[in-house]
Length: 186
Image 1 (cartoon, one colour):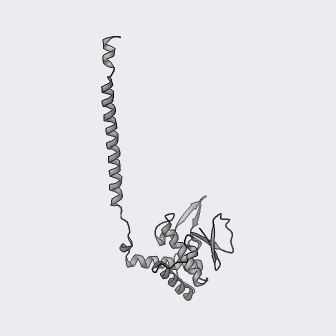
Image 2: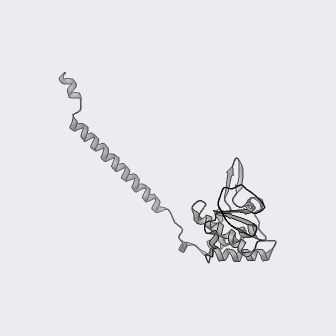
Image 3: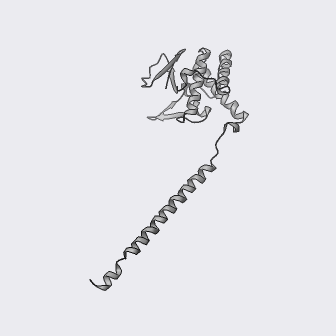
C-alpha cells in the first residue's frame, strides 16, 4: 500500500470521535425538541371547572335544555335525564368535543352528506321558540339536575348513543337500557 492512500483513511479514533459527536448532537436535538413541545403545551389554556363563568354555564344550560326538548320533550322526566346524561357522557368521553354546545351542534360529513349528532340540529331553523312551554320547562329542570347537580342514572353510566325505538340503525353496539321511546347503547 502506498503511504498517500493510507493517510486518507480515517483512523479508528477519528471515527469514534465523529460518532460520539453525532450521538451528542442527536441527544441535544431530542432534548431541544422535548423542551419545545413541553413549553408549547404549557402555554395552552385549560378550562378548569373553577374558570367556568356564569355566562358560559348559562350557555351550556340553554344548549342542553334545547337538546333535551327536541330529543325527548314528550318523554317522561327519566327520558329527559337520560338524553342529558348521554350528552354529558359524550362531553366527558374524549371521543367528542369537550364542550356541551359543541357536542350538541357537532356535524360530520360522510360520503359528501352532512350528518348531525342530534337530528334536530340539521332539521330545525336557527331560531328557537318552544311550542310546548311545559315540556321546555321540564327540559330545563332536567338540564339543571344533570349539569349543575351531577344527577345520573346508574344504568347509563357508559352510554354514548341512543335512538328512538321506532328506527333500527343496525348498530353493533351493546344495548344498556330502554327508557321511554329511546334505546341506549355503550
